Length: 132
Image (cartoon, rainbow, N blue to C red; front, side):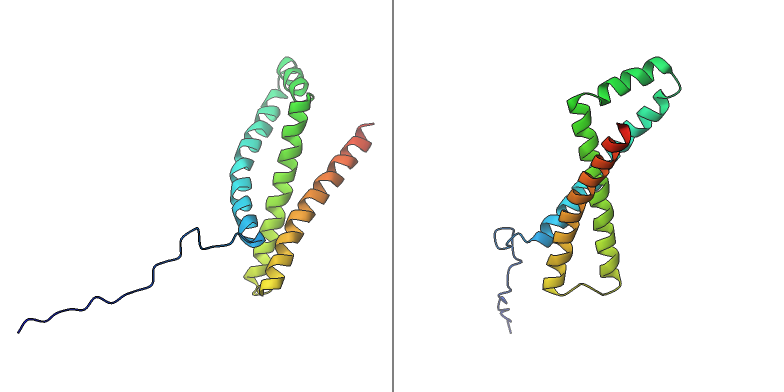
């Protein structure tokens, strides 16, 4: 006898058009992007450290860092470093099985974003106050 297999209709996996972007998803994506961007920032930092061995190279890189574009890069690096650190703390909190409820997850994501911006501004204000 010939058996006829009936095709079982299975639900399709949701695609990107189904998902609504949430703050938690956005902060997860930003955490990964910022982590990758930190590699570039660390290369600049190492370049600056190596330049310290030669006065001419050190003056050249400090002159470049002193421009508005260099300052913007440093500001972005500072934010990236602090944002990645706070994102890591957020994940560490989740590893302790705390903060996993929907409202708590969103609160931690907003705290990461607001905290990183606030701390970046504070670090730069302190740096400018110490420089003067």
